[in-house]
Length: 502
Image (cartoon, rainbow, N blue to C red; front, side, top):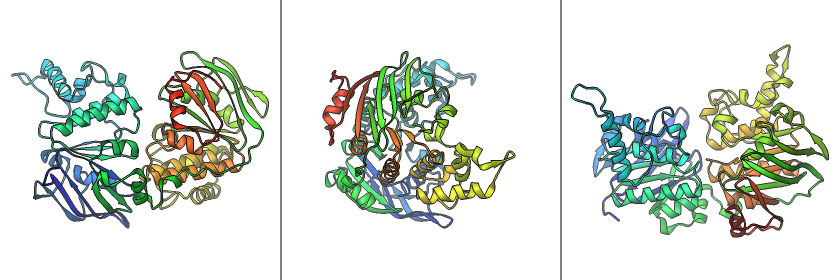
């Protein structure tokens, strides 16, 4: 470890009106180290990142770079100090090439007559990627890149020759295990170059594989900071949320009812084939698989978002024809999609607006919304799901990820469903919010709802599911019925190493 920190933040505080975002936050960042910043949504992580990035300024506290006090008044000052930030969602121009996207990050090279030097643009892009061992075609349109390559492109764009601190805010949220491994290799090369890295993440296995040092924030305060070797996932969670890891996803026993949903030999060319399973009332059926295994496509087919080529869907033993989400809703099926920010909620609208979207027909008379009924619905679900908000009029965009997800859940629970399909419902939310989401899901199961759960977090899936079915490249592989499930066996089936179908 380097003897002197590159950047020191002391006693940083920031308020937004009456809300305290951070209070007396401290952190030291050393060259050539990965420093993990952990905490629940609302713990102040994003505020600290925004202060270092120059997006917001602290009310009190100090920042020093190489021992010299600095004031970061805007992003340009942050970049001049050698600080580069990569946010969770890539900010790219999808219709432009990789090289063209990289060109906008710096002053583009020009010819003697001040026109763009396109040959130099290409060469510059190749050189920057080669320095990090990134292999992406500079002439490829960004819209054709995988999520992982878009994330790598953001890192390459952010870095310059004088970058001394790279801030990575949830860089692995949308990546598969293989893609994460590639990203970790790039981070390792940056460490070797002496770059300090501030890594904000929720996946504790990745955090402890990468981190040299850990800082935990809770309720805007710095709770503890030290070498990663002083922490375990269990102790980190205890500092973050005040309880042990084993209590985050407790399984509640539910007396299962009769089979309520059954699919027989569902098939969609190129996506999945021969899918058959049943879900009983009160049961949580977990669908496990790697990215691209076909789980999301199957759920979309059941909900009528995408037509199936063949197969049969039965509800309470009766064959049904579902050709649209409207038809699915009439059969009392609800679907919480994987991407809440694009498909689950309208971010620039209020909580009340979003909660009423799926049941507007029950809240209107002569084409006008009954204000009292709409307000009562909002208050009911804000209270029922314990959504942390200033009120029904608050914009969704102002909520934490966990509370946004609760609103999306509430929107569909308002339809009074009997079948609930959840596609990665805790994606991008912190450990505490995950526990709250699964507490809601368990409550729905206790009320007799038949639930299909998809999650890329295997630990969560195995903890809360009554049964688990694995999928590999669109093919149903194996059914696991005996709890506790063995993670290694399930993972082997997900990766195609187990070929029997039980």
